[in-house]
Amino acid sequence: MHTTASAPQPIVNDDISLTSKAADEVRRLMTSNNIPESHGLRVSVKGGGCSGLSYVMGFDEHPKETDRVMTIQGLRVFVDPKSLFYISGTVLDFSDGLNGKGFVFNNPQAQRTCGCGSSFGV
Image 1 (spheres, rainbow, N blue to C red):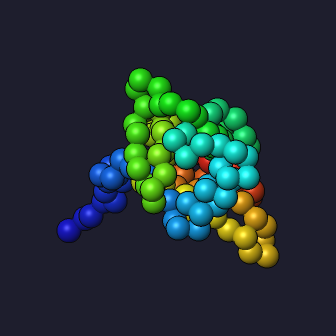
Image 2: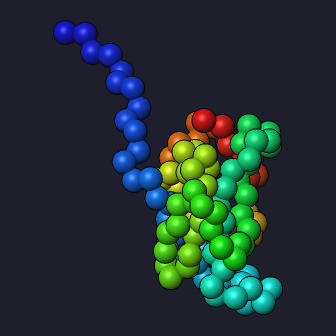
């Protein structure tokens, strides 16, 4: 009997997740930058970077009409549909270890990543 490798299964969970460390760091950034709690964390991707796509994070007062709006760890998170296509299933973490300090995107869809972890390819 001959078996062939099956195609990758689609990701069923189309949300993203934040670890408690990432959520705490987002709250710290909001406080230190005087960003109201009513604002949301925008997570997106843009073309560029050494691997093809780069992660982008920022704060927005309101979601855009087509955004997916999620409440994660008590934080509002906004993701546009195009970005969600590339980052669904991603777990956003925060590292403050010896290898550097910053947000870490654990993206199950990334086929390749750059050394700094800020860009990826699918």
